[in-house]
Amino acid sequence: MMTCPKCNITIRGDKRCCPLCKGRLKGEPEDGAFPVLEKVPVSTITLFRIALFLAVLAEISFVLISFLYGEWIHSFGVATMAIIFGLIDLGVALYYRGNVLRLITMQAYVILLAIFIIDHHFGAYYWSLAYVAPSILVALVIVTVLVGRIEGLVLGDYMIYLIVNVIFGLLQAIPIYKGINPFPVIAACSVAFMVAIAAFVVIFHFRELKNASAKYLNM
Image (cartoon, rainbow, N blue to C red):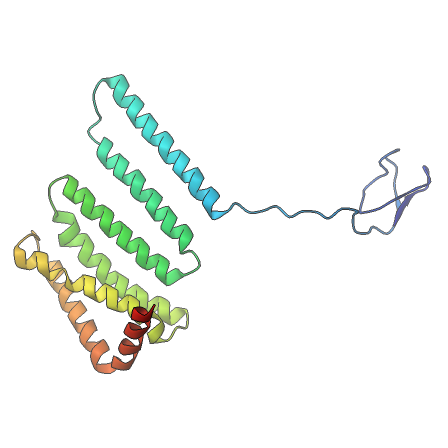
């Protein structure tokens, strides 16, 4: 306990000087009379609410600018979609931030969906089908294996991610067959890569594939 020799009082806690005379205290400091509350970090829902409020402000700004100019801005629809998918991506990041593999997978598919919708908005699928989707799906398979190895996971733990990625990769054959993909070379290479991965998993890791599928279906 600390004391003030001038005021002849005792003071609990850890104080620098006497609260009465501001003189130097003597003695050993101790815990305060009241507990010190730790600052609560900003919660996930609070971060999302802040982002949502900023998105609403951005939309209001777009509408106001359009009103002042007397006509709708040409890029208003694209900007709105960007804001919406930005919120979705943030929500995914906050929700899955404890699971790196699931976070990467979900964000990759959010990006793919956003690019498909933007391409559809402009009436074409040039970038999404010809370049973006094949590249992201192949990269996603590679990153899934790397993250699984780095995290020390067994193949059965991330097998379901490989299954989903390979299935979506094989679906690229549909636009190629129907002639929707304007430049199918990269997508065809991506499909061939997915077929090779599927064959490797079935031939060398069929048991893990069966267990992962059964676990997912039971869930």
